[in-house]
Length: 64
Image (cartoon, rainbow, N blue to C red):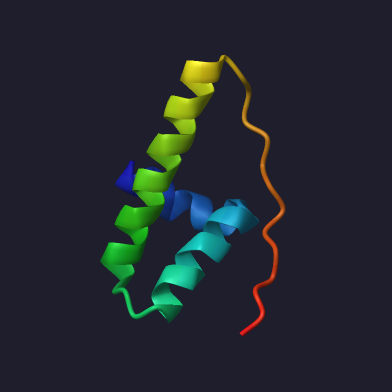
């Protein structure tokens, strides 16, 4: 899952936004990637639980 998280950062804008948000909060590269991997596991579990397909969400800009 770590490698999956690393690979998806350039392919999925929502994943990149999630990673960047955690980097901005002071997490190291590895910590942010592990959080992204865990988030992707949660999404996969929810898909299996609900019997749905992946529907990417458009990341919303946060006011700083």
